[in-house]
Length: 448
Image (cartoon, one colour):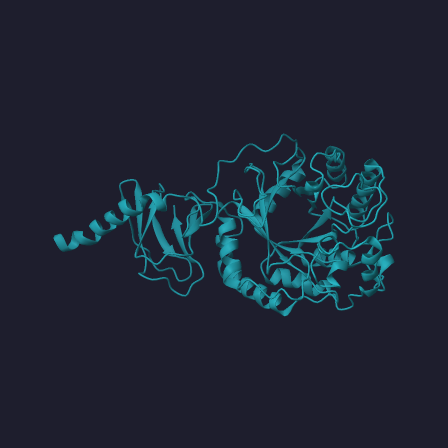
């Protein structure tokens, strides 16, 4: 009798000794998830509500930072960080001839990685438009020897291959003469010390109208840069109303790092898991809107030739799983070169992620956060009558969980092996191998 009780006693000791640390929801270096606050008041159309549900189901997207800054290959903030004048910076445009850009290959790469949508920079902070716009000659069709519209190519391929397309659009503009008064950035450009901000906003709305009428069905608009002039009147309701009038299903998100405004359809966290602020600027509280976190595949957004610090496929999968366990999507960035190529290191990693997603995607796609809050060792996701326990970092024989009512069985997702568990008071005790195996994510399916 004493020998049979010894494992149970040891497990109880483990529960008592580790209850305080195991009950925290935070990953090391991350804040615990705070309760979600209600989303700002709005009246989304039925099409928009359906799009929000699709977005939450999609879970994984490709971010593309690409523009004239890809030529010098020192990142998308080059104009600001190196204090380029507009005249000097414009000299990169004649060198921008991305003849190796292949929209079909990029969309296929996203699909192979298990990504359901693409968000591409239509205009970044340097004001350079990556599409055919009639509002300003500072664009890839008129100002470069390429003379083609890569956004058109990407939109056509995305529609053909069944991948949804979002447009990133920078509200901040270091090039346009009417972006005045200047905000925190863009002071080295040499623009006149005058301008009418309302005229700039008219220009912005005109470009957005082009994007939303000339490229077919668009999944949404991803804004950035409002933080340059946080106290300015950005006429958000006018701009958001324009977008929803032209395409009611289009989702609007803004990377402004504050609480969402009425008319926004999803909430963005930059380089942070939702609810965390390790980056220092994600100060917004969680809302009930769909959530998305964006992250780089190396350390740069725009192509940077000397940035070789690529995340491994395992690191990407770990972050994707932890994001899903926080009820959010992961938007993973790539930066094509000035010639239009996708770096080989990016391709190999995305293929590896896609192979994993092809096997374990059921535990990610269409799920919501599970009943067990995020922990240092992993997260849970849930769909229908299943709870997916994602054990990412745990080497002990027993894993202590809060009790989840109604669980009838537990099995490994990869091979169906049974996982023994018992309830001890208000805890569940899962019996796992003593050391982690080679799996990136040991997924245990709890069947209700």
